[in-house]
Length: 373
Image (cartoon, rainbow, N blue to C red; front, side):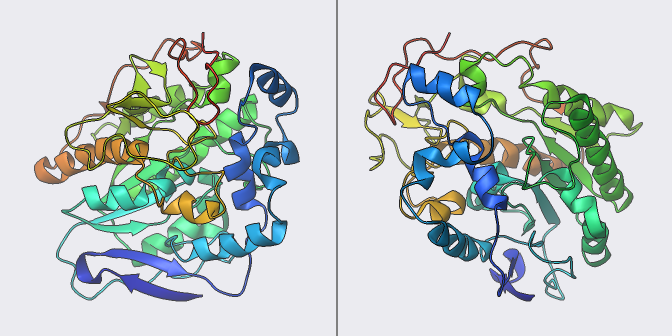
């Protein structure tokens, strides 16, 4: 494995891998919600076949699998720390003098898609990005990857974000999605990661999950179960060493799923034109979700350069900015004060509460009135 350090002393450590293509890891995670809900009938059809290859039907038939593999290899150069297709090794060596506290980021596609924005928010830190699409917490425990990382790095802060991937991208996760074993393994694995990081001296921020469009349409009462699990972990520590960060309100409108939100005064762009959008949002609003209803880049996953847009969106991604800013503000506050509460964000809804959507909102990717209830 060949590594490169970008950004100098106060930059971001990233690891570039060569010589091996990614198999279905990115396809599984990126395709996780690719049965995009183009019409109400399509929604029902996708729900009945929400597994395996059918998830990529919206995009996968238009390009070859060879292109998917080739562009995925390019993305690997932007992902840090660990490479799912390789045995764990010693990460890129830090410069001999680091003038800022070190922050290690672990997670899946959501934090990966917001990695540039998050690094920009964490101006008072040296960020080591270790996230990759499709991963679960067990990946970092498998083959002692996290232990290997901690033998080289001693982070002051660790950010853990796991939306809940399962399937071929996570062979270390042994139970089916949303089964009792699935939830128990996520809980146990995140507890193990947290314990190792706290023992090494890090304050751990566990980032909550966010609902996606499919969960909204089908009123899935289980979408928030991982948040319920994650939110309890900080309270298992006597001292305030772990913080749960509830981010769902950042990409919601009044507690409901939304495709777009009013621009904020801090955003660098408002009413940004997006080539892949059929129905532009109202004037003064920015799109905050991808066409798959989960991620943030408005060019993902329908464009030719989809893999590039996955990790480094070539259009302005308001969702990535809002998501990263919320997390960044919480972490920066900790760095300034040396303390953080066990819970940050809006209260979680009662257990088994389905997420709702904004009534009558137009899906910008299809022009259809979104059947949110």
